Image (cartoon, rainbow, N blue to C red; front, side, top):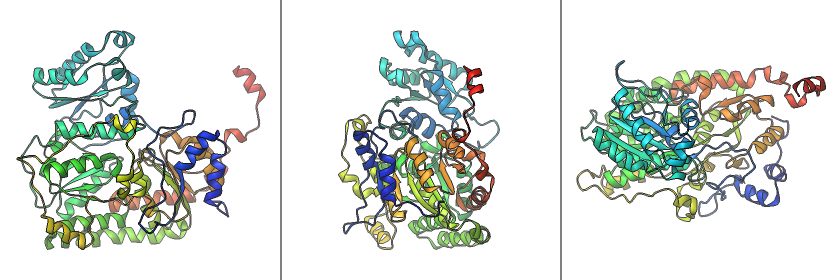
Length: 542
């Protein structure tokens, strides 16, 4: 980092002055200098979940990517067919690194496959429903899945193919669960819309369809964990050691049957608030399952989350088991922190990742003495930044109305309150919050920069002004950042490393960050724009 960091207010002015005045005014509302809450507990307001300004390069994905790639991607035995061009299907399959562990070698696992209808010009002109029906029948003959999902791309919505009617017909014809998602890429302002659509579809068509109760006394669902780099495997290991039964994970290392039995759990633990708060709220309303916010990224955060789960159940056997596991796992964590903190302490990081990752990973950096000087989300809403207390003040706009809000009521047969009102109130009095999330800003330092939907231009200017010791983002930004001589850590795909969740994951992350921020190789990087022009090469190229 530069010897003197610029004032955040100056940074905001510098990085917005390159825009036309209208764009600059909008971006100024999306860049906030973090400040303490006011007397009523409200943080500075940030403009978010609004359409990206045309002409700038954004980190965002589309609604289809959020539905098919993020939520459905980690599910191993729902055969998902993309109804659309081959490029959309390939992109949503290849660009994420989801993993799974089927219970046996012969158990179904469709994640290595990318199925799509490959719509062509004729299909756009004359309609693609016949092609979709043919694709579903062909896929069924080959794989014999227990469920097939259909994900729509932009052309499908534009020409009006009725994928839901096709799904109903195919469900009756094949005798398996077939359902569709109207997740056309243009819906909403980012992949966040696709998360919402996917959750609605899974909730309507799968959750609650199997009543076989899983074994175990302390049964939870883990929501918003997508098993990037094997994170879910490490969390599953820890929960099992504590004696906690994981009924389902939405949707890392997930299966159809897990979703179908999710309503049998007694607690929902929410990791990524943005991508799945819808599912948490709907299952509470329909089945009576309370939810709490947890974070398994960071050793201390993992210990805190385990204690919250144990506190909810309130059984001494579980509380003792959790404390025993923490006591056994933490010494190795602290030993590594003590070893590397002298080398990482005082260094700085920037995080611009989707969902809650830009929030959760600050915990890991704090544990090794590093400061996060700027952070933001690709697809966050105001409540992800400022906390859920702002929900009543968020205005519903045309983009929000594109996404269906389900009318959910208590199920007459399956609704079962897990705690009485008095029990919930007693737990709140003990400090256990239900259905609450304070947001990203509450955990960031005063004076740090919070930036929604950061652009390519702003990324480069931040690097020039701050020279952070590490920059965390996704694959699209990786090489631009590295050409500036700054180590870049992917937090969407982990660069084929990980897992970073839980205690062992924290140790792995500490060591990787130690190597990244202390290697001298980055100071030898000469970016292409700093090299002298080569007229002869340009002449030959022309």
